[in-house]
Amino acid sequence: MPILHNIILKMTSEKRYEQRISVFDMLKIGVGPSSSHTLGPWLASKKWVEALQNHTKINKVKVILYGSLAKTGKGHGTDIAIAMGLTGADPKTFDTSILNDTIDKLKQNKQLLLGGQPKITFDFSNDIIFNRKETLPYHSNAMKLQAFCDDILLDESIYYSVGGGFVVKHGQTVEGRETAKLPYPCNCTEDLLKHCLDNNLSIFEMVWANEQAWRTENQIEKDLFEIWEVIKHCVYKGCHTQGHLPGGLNVKRRAHSMHQQLLGQATDYKNVIEWFEILRALQLDFAKTLKWISCFAFAVNEENAAFGRVVTAPTNGAAGVIPAVLMYYICFCNKQATKKEVIQFLCIAAEIGTFFKKKATISAAMGGCQAEIGVSSAMAAAALTECMGGSVQQAMMAAEIAMEHHLGLTCDPIGGLVQVPCIERNSMGAIKAITAANIALSSDPASAKVSLDEVIETMWETAQDMHTKYKETSEGGLAIKVPVGLAEC
View 1 (cartoon, rainbow, N blue to C red):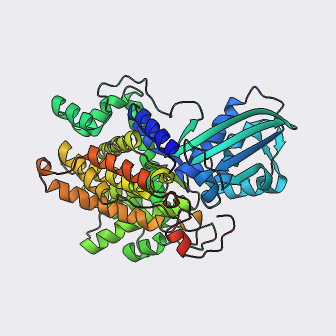
View 2 (view 1 turned 120 degrees about the horizontal axis):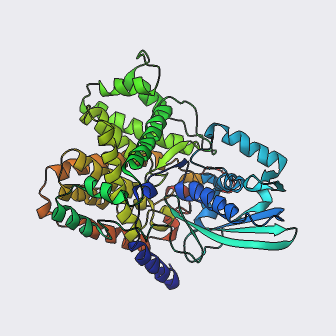
């Protein structure tokens, strides 16, 4: 990696270190298959259009993609996401069932409503350019948006999709909440530990107090429960949908058949609520429990790969880990768990994720898959540990263990698609999280040799040492071992 790039990465990491990040920055409701390559570009183009409201003479736009966005953008649906953002559609609320039809009409008519305004000419094949030969220095996921009146350039803006649905406009600070006055500000996990021990707080209690700097208690509860509802319905839909995933790899959905084998076709239920209660009534052996965890993870990531609605946790590529571990906890470990325990789990998981965001990265294009599956596994491990009665120290130990055993994990998606090996990796990340929690719960953290801060620092150093071809480019690893014949991927 060029020296200048390393310097920029270091400066960027130091700036992230001071961020104040909310639970709702780490857990976002959006559309698959990628938080950095789909959700981020969607939000970036939407922000850009909103900033152009005073430009009434625009009759043409052009978007140029660089680095990882260009190299794997086709497989991730980056062009689709950009077009939707240009129309002003909200990824949180847009009806994903009509996404394909909407895009087909845009391609056929070669026109779109720019931010809901009068139609402009827009040709997918000419107005979205995949520049695979150039990477901009700030971040591998870069996009340049240009607005024209005939041939006159009216506006040109560069946005970076820096992972987890976070977007940054060139020349501005990393998206965050630096100005928030938190009662317990944490720049590193050592800060978290000190706040909790000095004030006799659990991680959840500390996070809950901090979140009130942005929202009322009622709003926090409402918004977190909305996230849980999206997770639950995503798992349910994934377990009940057959077929093959889009993109050209012809990957068969497996969650449906796994679900049938585990639950049986004769089981009677009419909706997600009845289904959920049936799951909680199951009496399972170890083998079946493991299979259910994999089924939950597969369900979410198959929905993600099919442009379904998921919760970025902290990314879309790793969106199945936290749901799988949360479902494991409330269905098989604490069958009396209520909304409170769900909210507790989500708050703890998100807080742990903020430290990776601040001091390392949650972007596979910057750090490989350790930045996605590894981070989500650490988040889930800490949440499960505290929810199972573990101490703050044990929760942090669990997060450290989970990440320690993902260090160096590369991102090498076949065909640029978030399918192989991504879907299976979510299952592995979930099971590693549960294992890490079990180890921590039976251990004395005082005897631990590695702290969570140290493993986060190690992950960031590993990310910088990792060869670029293993950072979501589809130019190394499995991506070049399996011939897929996908055009422009």
